[in-house]
Image 1 (cartoon, rainbow, N blue to C red):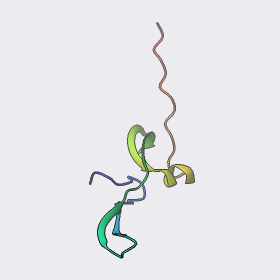
Image 2 (cartoon, rainbow, N blue to C red; image 1 turned 90 degrees about the horizontal axis):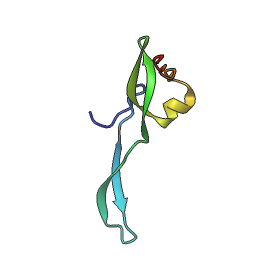
Image 3 (spheres, helix red, strand yellow; image 1 turned 120 degrees about the horizontal axis):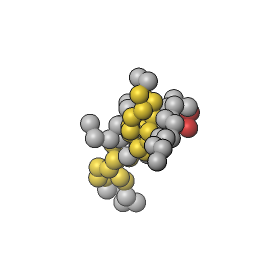
Image 4 (cartoon, helix red, strand yellow; image 1 turned 90 degrees about the vertical axis):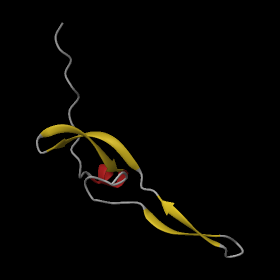
Length: 70
């Protein structure tokens, strides 16, 4: 699946676009996905997460990477 949250499994919803004359055509509501660095199974990974999961604290963000000493 291309668009889904890796934490809650939320996917795009489908429905109808209804005009004033009640003409009905198909449409989709896409979810608000963000690419974040999170800790998954003890390892930092880049994952796709919806903003609701990010806000609610289901995701523990990975610490910033340390620069090597020069």
